[in-house]
Amino acid sequence: MLDIEGMNAFHGDFQALFGIDLHLEPGETLALIGANGAGKTSFLRALCGLTRAQAGRFALNGQAMLPLEAPARARAGIALCPEGRRMFSSLSVAENLMLGGRIGRQGPWNMDSVCSLFPILREFAQRPAALLSGGQQQMVAIGRALMANPALLLLDEVSLGLAPVVVDELHDALVRIRGEGMAIIFVEQDIARALRQADRFLCLLEGRAQLAGPARGADLAAIGRAYFGETA
Image 1 (cartoon, rainbow, N blue to C red):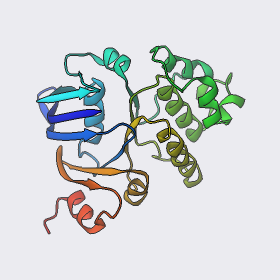
Image 2: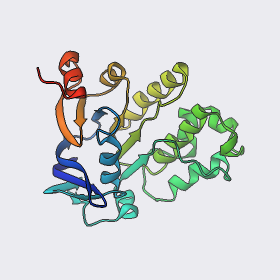
Image 3: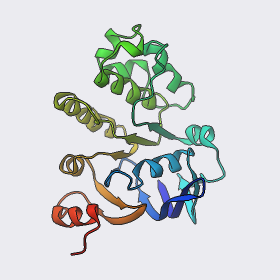
Image 4: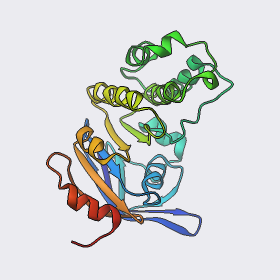
């Protein structure tokens, strides 16, 4: 479903990613792990067209993505839930959600299904998004991305700074989201939780793929060495 070969990405003259390869199947979940500055956010932004990228191949469902700007990639089926949530604070919860739906893609996610996933959003639908707690805002941000009915959902640090009980609720929601068949790439600092949630993992170090493999049965010691760039 997602084919990437030799992706490089750049912030101006600074190269942030070096030769990343990735192949993701429909319904598959990838945990993207690595220390701060490893290139995780740069990779997600390169996928959705917010960071300049080059690649030998970058296709979603057979469609070449590199020639497309960010809005066209969204219409093709890539949606990003960014770090920091990025609410439109002057808009209500419902208005924030409806912005995702403006992409116009058909699929299972609409206002009713998102509010079924996160019932508190129905209760607070007319409340300004700025008045919600951090966890509630994160639910809005995920719901807004889902409203675009993406083929590929990108989640950047969805649990950062949230209470453990809220993190548990969000990760439970990811299990339900996976059931709808979309592919997911998510960034998570808690490596053990990331491996429980994912089918596969990719560990980045200084913009390079340091280690990758199946999440089930993964060698935590090897991941720890890759995470910090240590040799065996």
